[in-house]
Amino acid sequence: MKSDLQERLSKLPKVDVLLATPRAEELLQAFSRAQVVDGVRAQLEALRKQMLQGDGHVYEFAEVPFFDVVEGDLRAKQQPSLRRVINATGIVLHTNLGRAPLAERAIEAVVEVARGYSNLEYDLAAGKRGSRHAHVERLLCELTGAEAAVVVNNNAAAVMLAVNTLAKDAEVVTSRGELIEIGGSFRIPDVIERSEAELVEVGTTNKTRIDDYANAITDRTRILLKVHQSNFKIVGFTSAAKREEMVALARERELLVVEDLGSGILIDPAAFGLPDETTVREAVGAGVDLVTFSGDKLLGGPQAGIVVGRSDLIAAMKKNPLMRALRPGKLDLAALEATLLLYLDEDRLRESLPVLAMLTASEEELKAKAQTLCDALGAVPGVRAELKQGESYAGGGSLPDEALPSWVAAVRSEHLSANELADALRAQSPPIVARIAAAALNLDVRTVSEEEIDEIARAFQRIHDLP
Ligand SMILES: *Cc1c(COP(=O)(O)O)cnc(C)c1O
Image (cartoon, rainbow, N blue to C red; front, side, top):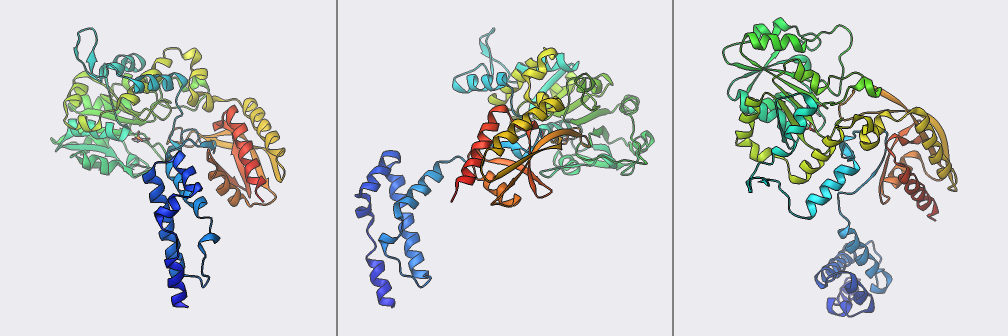
């Protein structure tokens, strides 16, 4: 038996022989010689292992679809890991799915800047070195009423840079009700520690009064930090110090107020029928010295951390050596500037900014779109799709407790459980991500475009065409 196995192993074709076959020739049209050689070697090795560890069956080389496996592996390796997905969860700013889809104008700006050179750090009027911070600063000031602004990699970096610049080796006072953790292990206490400042916690989880801040101030205190609670809400017997009270206290004791607004909304939410939120302009207007917020949450732009406020403080942040490590790239700056430019025309913002369009979509709009999806899916044999009311969310820690009434296609398959269906949809190209509710797969159309409805229908077709 053993010698038989040895014999068969020794009879496996050599790499050179395999490379001379017509199937190998075909593969060499699509892949480099080195790729094909590696692929053939890896597959031969896998086969050898299989024969040695054996399930008792002794494989003949001809029995296995050798080159199909090699080709499958080569193609799989060429598939990028980071891919577009269809978001049918209804969560608009889904952090795991890349948060805000960009506006058309922002995409164009990215492509334009990516393709060639740009004046990223070049002053065209003067013909000499310029600053990457110059491109969006004036626009941010106009949109928020602030004196100055600077952009970094993300909001976590913005908080870090502000605290490190203004309170290094000193104390930062924060309410215990605001010591939040945002998904992905952004914890305010950790960020303050890494910013080389000392956190002083005041108040309790549900109540913090202005006197709690006042009593905690020492001659080492520099910042009163206010943090948006973002992804949770404390309800019931609660109170928090007012922004205005914190500003007054800081003025009196010669301290700074820094506010991490989280999402940072630039428009009046009421004017767009959105739940109440402090706008960046309101925080600046209340006298907060520095306000930080994300570029890819409610603002609807690329990943970025934006800081607006007093010009002397922003100037100090720009000079911090950490700035070099936290600065934004040209593609993000291009997308951010193009997104901010859209805010100059609020009348058209709903059409130009996808995040706002999705958040403010009317129930009739959503119902009609969900009906279209149901009709498309209902035409696939073995699939039942039912129009149902659902709830979508802003996500990304924005508008935390507000469910937005939506419409979904509640889908069941004759052959697959809801879990199996969800798995199969995630394996499609593009992958489709949806939520399971009451043994059905709910596809929420708030985050699905008209074009994607066809793609979803084709994916269901492929899944149900399988033997
Ligand atoms: C989302 C959020 C952050 C983190 O922002 P990133 O841009 O993801 O770094 C920080 N603070 C608050 C209050 C947030 O809501």
